[in-house]
Amino acid sequence: MARQPNYDFEKRKKEQERKAKKDAKRADRQQRRDERRAEDEAQPAPPTADATE
Image (tube, rainbow, N blue to C red; front, side, top):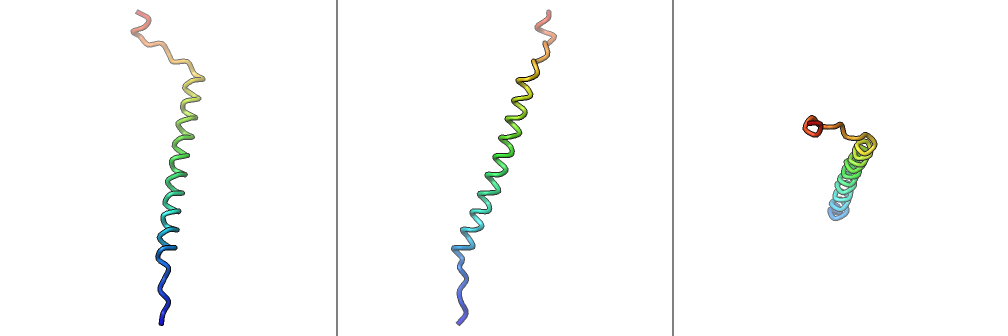
C-alpha cells in the first residue's frame, strides 16, 4: 500500500513561508517609512506663499 502524504506538514510549511514573506514585506515598508521620515525631519519645510503674505 502506498504511503499517504503528510498534508499537515506541507500546509504548515506553506503557511510559514507565506507569513515570512508578509513579515519581510512589512519590515521593508516600515524601513522605507522611517527613512522618509528621517529625511523630512532633516530638511526644513519650505515656506508657503500664504505664510509670507
